[in-house]
Length: 134
Image (cartoon, rainbow, N blue to C red; front, side, top):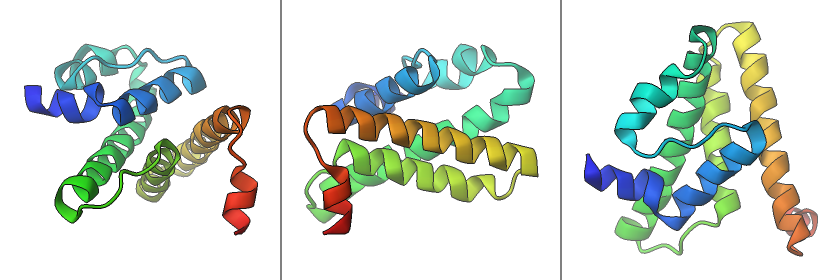
């Protein structure tokens, strides 16, 4: 289990992702995998747990895929934004299997975190609109 803590909680990319979740939703990040699937998840009302689990699983999947690209495909590391957007893509995709109300909430939550990270990067001088249009 310890090795997964390095990938999902301790590396700089993962720390950025968890801090973005904290800033976007005020949710204190889990400290390790056991905490994530244990006491951290139990902090949420039963009604919201499935949604949080889908979102967190999507973000972990995005971190994992980005890590694998670097390790096995010798690609340049993805930017923090790419990891967040990859995670929100998966969260939206997986939420298609949920009830309509849950889908709406997931899409809204994805927009919240995407907007937050774009705003953070824009404050540091990164013009994402120009990059997206190029």
